[in-house]
Every structure is written in structure tokens, then in C-alpha cells.
Length: 267
Image (tube, rainbow, N blue to C red; front, side, top):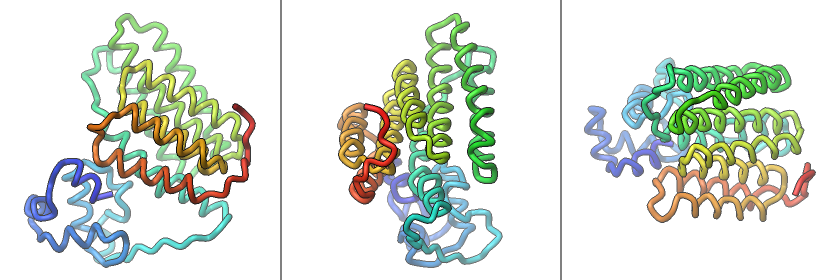
């Protein structure tokens, strides 16, 4: 997480270390992909400096002086599957989404309030079963759609469409976690459509990449790779380094999962 975010800001390890009041070697330890111990205080400071939410940067709460991150593959264990999809890969996706600029809200704070609600539901996902969240999130999406229809300006509708895209993507994740691949594919497709309505290339590419990530997990590796390439085309040659890093993880997952066609219920 630290390395692509730093490179996306065109910072060297030495420059980041200097801004944190630490050394280049300390930053290097953060970027060794779990192969070294590091100070959680430095991790928290680096996450804040690079505007990475601390929850996405690992154990950066400062309660443990030194931590050792180890990743163990556990096959088809359902809790491991949720950890991988909701954590490791989705964390990169969330980092990309956090890079989407937040335009000034001129619609009475509606878009900002709705986005905060989506964020609250996402935080609940870590401790609440997906089946218990799904109905509430779908009601939240209906409210977003209603408010969007009553927006009086193109700019307001675009902002609300972006909020709707984020909420639909989360609904897709919940459906996927419940094993309802047909609904998940529909929600993810709706998220892509709403992102296009918002005229936001970065958000559109993120949602296409999220759909690719889902297809990879469903065993549709070829479709996943095609969607990842499509996301690259949306961003163009000047795509941020963090976007490229995330898309590489999506492509890697597309080649990793067996092409079983599990849950393939739609075109």
C-alpha cells in the first residue's frame, strides 16, 4: 500500500522519510511486503502523509511497537476467502477510490451525507453478516436514486451518481459474499453505469476493475483479464501509479483462480 501511493505522488523513499522525521531505511522496511518488522508509529505517520486510511494500511494503531505481517493461503476456507476479497485486494481498490476527488457539494450536503452513510455500512461489514446488511444497503441505494432524480443541476446529478456507484459496488460485494453471483454481477454492472453517468474516468475504471475482480473470483479468468484491460483503456496512458498497481493485482487474481465458471448465471 505504501509503495504505490508514494510513487503515485512521485516521492522517493528518502523524501517520504524526511517528511516523517525518519530515515529512508525505515520507509524501505514498510515496503518490503511483510518480510520485515517495522514501527507501527512510522506506518501510521506514512499512511497519514500519503492520505491512506489507516484501516487499509494494516495494524497502524500504534498499540504494538513491532509487528510481523504473514500471509497464509488456506485454500477454500470461507473466512480466508472473505479476508482476501474484502481485505487484501479490496484494500487496493479502496485506496484507488480514495483518490477520487471530492468536488465542492452545492446540493445542500446531500452527496456528502449519503457517502458517509455508505462508509458507515462498509465499516459494519467487518463485524456484521452480509445477509443482515444487504436489505439496509439496498434501501440506502433506493434513497440515493430518489434524491438523484430530484437534483436540479447536472453537477448535482453527477455527484450523486458517483455516490450511487460506490453504494452499488458495495451491494455487489455483499451479494458476492452471500454466494448470489447473479445479483452481484448486476450490482457491479450498475456501479459501472452510474460511474459513467458521473463522468468520472477514475471511478469508472475502479468499478470496471472491481467487476473484473469479481469475475476472477467466480472463475471467469478470461473475462477478468478483458475487464482489467478495459479499465486501463478508460484511464489512458497517464493513469496513476496506484491504479496500475491495483489493476496488476486484479490481473494476477484472474490468472490464479481456476476457470470453473462458478456462479456464471449471466452473459
